[in-house]
Image (cartoon, rainbow, N blue to C red):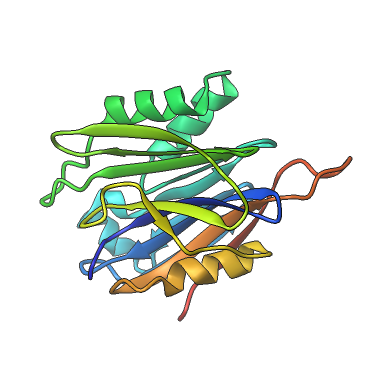
Length: 204
């Protein structure tokens, strides 16, 4: 089954995480790259951006206490609103409502997720619907939403002890046409425990 882009949230070893996977039929030549406290998805051939402006964006952005994951520029908008003091639920809702679905030939939905402590959020905006939900996360539990077929919030079997393992598990989910994946996992508590560790998986 082809589900397109995947946004996932979860908790492992008492640490929350977000994950992202690009699955693509039209633009499979893409990679994920860590840039500071962000992970950028972009085409390997920059000329592809002229064909579709939606294929390059920060898929993950992290703060000291929260991480955001999305399939478009809404990740940046959501992070800015959280930095301004807005609750993640409200930041996702407002950002998705403002930007709406992508105006491409498929009316691609915009997805978003966020985690903070033991709480997580998922959101999706389609041409005819906007949904955002809050989850209480427990160890070994994960949820996902995708652009096609799996547009409800689904429980999935994902967990991992490091961001590399989580990113690889996202890539290995049993859906068609995986391209690349990324993840951010909260650090263990303590004096230097704030923030998230990032990882990407590019098979080529």
